[in-house]
Image (cartoon, rainbow, N blue to C red; front, top):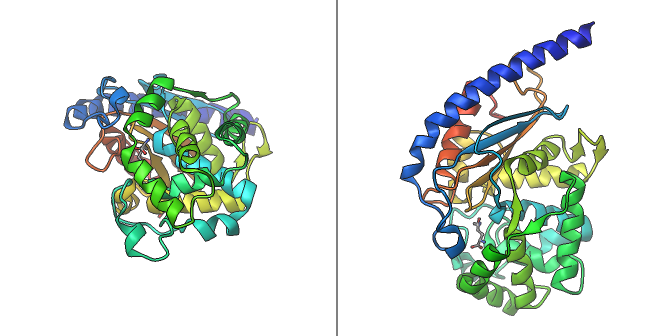
Length: 330
Ligand code: DON
């Protein structure tokens, strides 16, 4: 009886939330003209910049979707959270942290400046390119294929399907990755890169080119919200301490050099990618009177990005949602 009433209340709450989301998505979609698609990657120049979609997944598997939530896009920097977790799983946290730190930089994601300014040139964190390229080099396997296979298996464990790579985006990035190549050569010279430059770059850029939709990243967000426990499959898919570390990095470094503002005004661990994706999460809370207090994963896609490389419409939408539903962790 009590369970039936809870179920009924939830159904009502989710349909009200869906109505709110539809209204907010339509409203914030109109801001897409203030942003631009990531035009430094030729294959991303031509995508429809007016899209905006969201998927929220709660622990019982219920999904609340709105807008252009089914459009697929490439993971880009959201892959940095996944590769960091995978490196910790295979090498252990201490080994990884000897090679990549956990400090925000306040610089652009592709900046090279701190590598030379702070000896011995250890990347500041795994959410910037220098850190993520180093992480790619640490993944297990003697070739880029083996390294990617390890990641594929791990991603399949979380989202229930094998990821595919958008070859057009990969080729486009590979041909224009001059700054990333410079970072990789610098890291090789300083001894932080464990694999060869080209192999590390291939792994890094292929991970950026994995195709997902809002549902996939919302599901990964949900798993992290529950400290690595997959509440739908009812299985611990990554250790709690690794999940906690990944969330701390998302909060402090996940939104590039706008991470401080995002923590202050949205207050949720999140990771963005330049294709316009944002993976965010709400940990379970003790207050139960508002929606989503049992925690949820949030996937957003809005390819019009701002000056930092974050989805302009996506950040506005998330800020609104977090305020309306009091979701900030602070
Ligand atoms: O390294 C690049 O340029 C991209 N493939 C990664 C893009 C991204 O989302 C920004 N990175 N932090």
